[in-house]
Image (cartoon, rainbow over all chains, first blue to last red; front, side):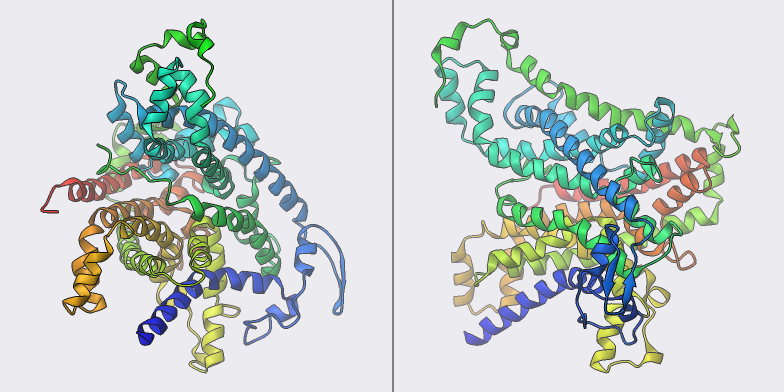
Length: 290
Length: 306
C-alpha cells in the first residue's frame, strides 16, 4: 500500500514538473541580468534575481550593481500593446456574451428549424485552417478600411469566440433543471421573461466562466491580430511579443522573457478560475448531442 | 422565484414570439449571421480567389480557371508541405493522447493538494499557442536552453556534445511543445469520463487480482472510448490547421524540416502576396483535413458493442 502511495506521488510530481518547468524557466530567465544570460553553462536558478527586466520593459532606466541599464527600444509598443489587448478583449467578451448567451440557451433548451444543421456548422466551423480563412477576411478588411483598427480586431475575434462560447454554454443550459423554468412559466412568465428573470441567474456561474474564456481567447489570439494590425497603433500584445523575434528588432532574451511572463499572467489567473468550473460545463460532442 | 404575476398580459415586444420555434430563431439570429459570415463568405470568396492569379505586390489579377490547382499538384514544395503537415499531425496526436490519459489518471487519484495540481496541469492550455512556441524556444536553445543546461548540470553531456534539437529532431521538438499545450484539454475531457466510472468495478477487478495496467485496460478504457475519439479528432484537426506554433518556434525551418502546409499558405499569402495560389493550396489542406475529419467522425459515431 505504501509503495503504491509513493508511486502515485512520483507521478503527481512528474506531471506538475512537466506542466510548470517551461513557465518556471522563462520566469527564471526574466529574473537574470544580461551578463548572466550569456554565461555558460546556463543558470538554472537565477543567481541574483531582480525585477530589472520588468522595469526596462515598461520604459524605466534602472541603476543596478552592474551599472545603469536603459529601457529597450520597444517599451512604448509593449505598453500600447497591453492597453489595446485589454480594450479589445473587454469588447470581445461583452459582445460575445450578448450574442452567445441567448443562442446557447436556444440550442440547449429549444427546438427550432435548422437546429441540427447549425450545430454541425458550429462544431466544424474550425475545420478550415485559420490561415486560409484569413485571406477573405484580409480582402474584406482592405476594402472596408478595417485594417489596423481595434474594431477590426474585435470583429475577427468575435468570429472565433462566438461559436466556441455558444457551444460551451449550450451544454451548460442543458444541465439546469427544467422544473424551475416550468414553474416560472406556470406563474405567468413568457418564455423570454422566464429566460431573463429566472434562467439567466441560475446560469450565472457558467456565463461568468464563459466570459472569462472569451476574454482569454481574445487575449491569446495571435494570427488574426497579427495580420490585421501588425505595425499599426492598434496592434495587440501577441504581435508585439512576436516582433521581438521575427521583427528584426534588437534582441534581448531576458526582456522578452519578462514580456512573456507579463502576457501569461491573465492566463495564470483564469486558469485558477477555470479549473473550478470546467467540470460543470459539460461539453456537448456529436455523440451525446441527441 | 420572485416573478411578478401582473406581468402576465403586459404587451411586450417579445410577446409576438409566442411560438417556440420563432423565438428560438430570434435568439440564434445574430449567431446565424456570424456563422454565415465566418463560414460561407470565406469559403465562397476564397474559392473565387483561387480561380484567379492574384498578386498584391505586382497588382496582377487574371481569371485563370483551375490553373492554380494544376500548378499546385506539380509543385514539390506543396507536396512536401502537405506531407510535413501529416507527419506533424501524427506525431502530435501520438504524443498528446497518452499524455492526456496520464495527466487525467493522476488528477483522478485522491491526494493532498489535488486542486493545486489541477491548476498546474491546466496552465499550459491557457497559455496561448504562440507563447508556447516562444517559451519552448528558451527550453530548446543551444546556448541558454533549459534542456542542455540540465543535461550539463547532470553531467550527461559536455559543452561539445550539446544537443541541437532543431537540427536533429525538428518535427519531434515542435510536436512535443505542441502537445505540452494541448494535452491538458484532453486530460480534462478524460477526467470528466473517469469520474463517472463506478468505484465497485475497480474493487472487483482488484479482488480478481488485476494489476493497475490491466485494471486500466479492462475497466477504465471502455468508458473512455468517446472522449478518446473526441481528443483524436480535435488534436488531428488542430495540428493540421495550426500556424502559430510553427511561426513562433521554427518559422518553417531549419531548411524545410517543419515547413507545414499552413506555413506555406501563410508564406504565399503574406510574404509573397500570391493570394490566388495560396487559396488553391488551402483547398488541398482543407481536403486533407476533411479526409482525416470524416475518417475519425465515422469512427466516432459508428455504434459498436459499447
